[in-house]
Length: 462
Ligand code: ZN
Image 1 (cartoon, protein in one colour):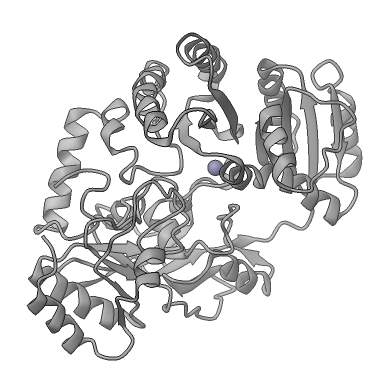
Image 2 (cartoon, rainbow, N blue to C red):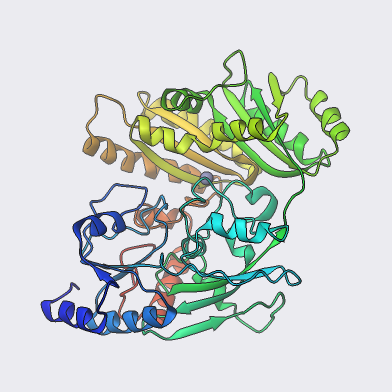
């Protein structure tokens, strides 16, 4: 399926003005996401301003059998928004209207192109927030967050994105517009179609608007950074934090290798005089100062060192140590990324197996671990060794991924905790989903998108 000359002429005729672009820099920028593993090659970029335009555009693409890649802030890490085969990229970035916040219902309706951070600022005026938060909040968009069911740093407190959506407006491949759910907190009327679209990475329909559920903005957040000697201490500390009576809003972990990369890339300082193999950032909500002090002084024997941020800018500095990791890995080398989830109870056994696997099979690799350990979510990054060329490295990581995912399967984990499947993890989906589940997913794809125009080649084939 590719765009014919007549098809192109028809699109340009029916959508005059600046809705469509084939400028080389647009094709390059809109055809890729943060993964950068495939060269972008879309045929056109469309930037509609309304649901009505999205609907007319999809209807025509469906008729022309032209593949469409829905596109948000393109901060994804699984290649879900990449367009490398002559597709039309459908960017929602011009659709960023936010309705007034409904303070009583604690909801807000926004268009899909609204940037995450803008929703936060809008809700904060009323003491509310949309508790979906990650390092890419300045460019990620609501539609992309929902389509990928994005995770982030506060999942331990609030759960994944899908828990913070009340209603969706979705445009199907035929151009038909569905209104699902509205602003109802309770709606117990059969199969919840909204949830099929959330996390389906644009293969079933295009989300154009959403009614988001808001919650009270936390009044006080305390940020602590701990240095630890072993992974089992990281998990012991988590048990202590969980049973402390404190409200945990983040429990993040990273290793000395992350810090080394971070310090090479940015002018950041570690708050500790000595180096330690493991670090944990803990954020607690609404804690009483005495309670917090009692808790931290009970941690001798588990932590080697610790610091409690004394003011907002110190808290930000501690957060930068965690949130800057991903960017510093990409800026100082070529990381091969994995994002796995394990039951918390199996994390330690999994990490033991993981260390053994890499030491035995890939002893020359630098394996950089960090993640949202409070959710059982581990980001496993392998850095390309300097002497190895990119193609050879990617071929070896493909082989290693099969061994890694076999371990994930053994420990009943998931091959993706929050990044999604896209194109990068598609060959491995069978490690987490059964053949029957995959068959049902394909069947659903056929129901919603019979001609297979929506984000083809991603997640599952039709
Ligand atoms: Zn993450």
